[in-house]
Image (cartoon, rainbow, N blue to C red; front, side, top):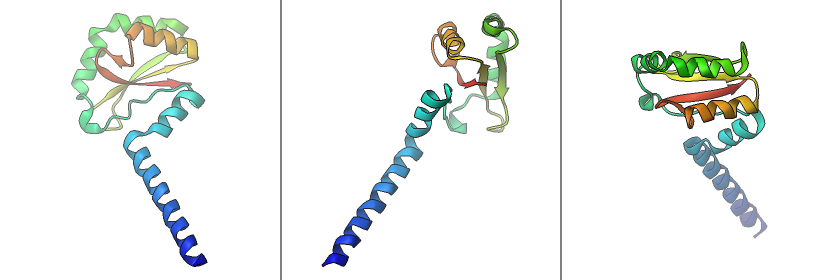
Length: 126
């Protein structure tokens, strides 16, 4: 009788771990919480198929050059924008590196959210 009880408890534990793993794999909820709370970062976590092509990303950066300059001027020498070309061949997103939470908030205000005129962003506190 005791063995059956432990077997059931073990089965429940395995099912809970599996459910948490599948949920995290699908939603990246724990990653998002750690990014936001611990590191003051934001990552888009989009798959390659959901990213725009590199030409579109480059075109948006060039078209909105004044926005780029405005963001970079928030903290001279401490804010940088780059195109992430390495994650997905032929696809891209934009990474913005910033020094503090207040600068991140200003960047989000300038952009009106967490995309650069429709291009997915990673906001990285360095």
